[in-house]
Length: 375
Image (cartoon, rainbow, N blue to C red; front, side, top):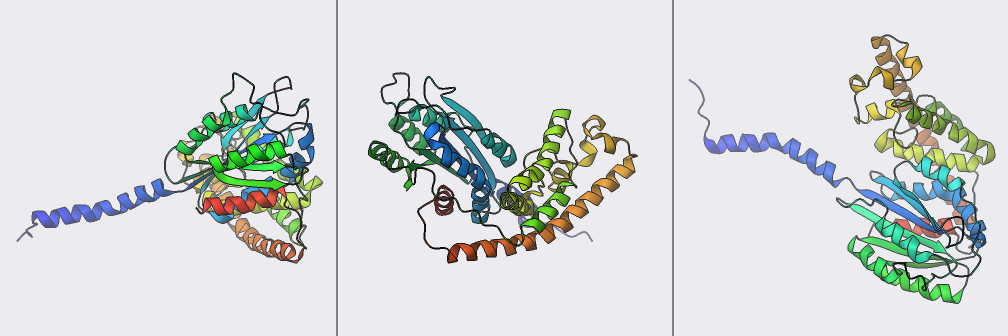
């Protein structure tokens, strides 16, 4: 005799079957995003601070990961000067490719700025209205305006900052104002911007403060392991993308040659991101990362999008090579994770021992991010 299935029982069965799918969709939608844009005065007086920002961008990125390890992290930059300089604004849009942002940051030079006031209004307008902010989901949107001179309020074509900050509030973008130096006229405006932007007013020394680089006993081993992890990268896609991915695998060596502690910070960031994204380099173009994280499948990749050395192999050998590199990366990242934890403890201990110093750009940004990401 066949069992009788009542309508309530059938409805309950359908509801149970739907639960995993619903839960999956819910968790996908709920994945948090943290977006941070720096609006940076790049005129001549800002040279010291810009150099400090180049040295500490990786520790700032790591502070975001430490506060929210599962988040998608996007960072961007609006460099500004004034009318009559080489440029008024230059935009690097919000991106998960922090290595690309870092490469662009290295190109920035402090020049120009003949008169006192600068094109702050235009720079804030670009940051709030022309960067591609995420508009949905659980997203933290944070801007750091960093400069030493007030805005030109006499430019008729500009959207003035009070109007821009009203839009920022509608978009749920926090705007912080970091004052380099002690100029009273700039301080008045920066305080107004921070208050209207629901952010913090943060005074620091003109040169950005003493950016402390802490070398650790683990740096050399961390760099060696990260180089081995970079050796597991399989660039794929159009040739231009493959070349960009290859360049990123060499970036660590270039940084390590000049600044080992900075290269160690870069490797620490990549290792912490690897837990959520399987990345060895940031951005697109690494087949090992994308297959491991489920962003693509090996069978979906066209032969023309594979690197030459992989195309030379038989189909089954290609899959074997991919599996080998995935396995190598997993094992190397586990080793690196233990070293990074030791490095973090060492850095924290050294900071605790050091005497109090004037606020520095990197520390005030890191502290502000930790507070505002958790709001």
